[in-house]
Image (cartoon, rainbow, N blue to C red):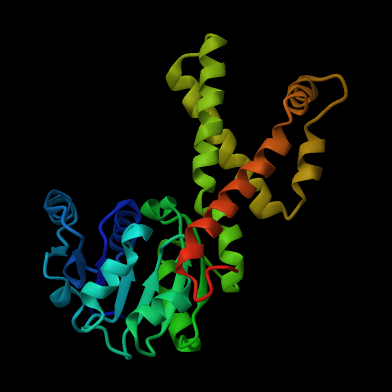
Length: 277
């Protein structure tokens, strides 16, 4: 069990993780320390809502922490690391949830052989349903990977991947909830146009998504086969799917994931040892 977890950065992802680990009882609020660049209002809110320890003294926040979580905006990573690197020791674990920032870059900025784990959770961590992928840096050993898994398993599922795969993970599961919410927005609009009450349509749409996800999870059947089982020739489902095909629905989603993946690569390029790669 961790005695102290420090967050450098207090944005939405930090809050999602904090909400998840406190909600699961994995950490007590007094074990969580949070700091950020300069937004005192944000720190005050986190302290008031979650009763965590907040401070502008970054060095004090990371001192003696078992895990230091880098959760600032990627553009602030150099400044953020610079502000705490003298306090971070090689017996601490640094976990980064920054899109595109390599573990090699973080290690180089720290200037010491600190174990670094890169993680890509999503905001479903808030309710304990994140799909998190983690990758180990050069000095992160199996015990460090296990420690990171222990943390993130409390907010959902955790999968260990090669670091090169994290760009694709960002495009799939990191950004994925937004794609689903975008789909739901469209379904709600269609339901409203069809005359359904908002409360009724929301209940039906949400349960439809939950049911489809559970079918994929529990039946072990391919999505293609599940789709075919409810698509009768000449029926309503086929009519709807033909319209999606007309508008290149699947192609659009594929390009959507590719764009997010490429953006992750672009964001990370300046933070590689060899930016030309």
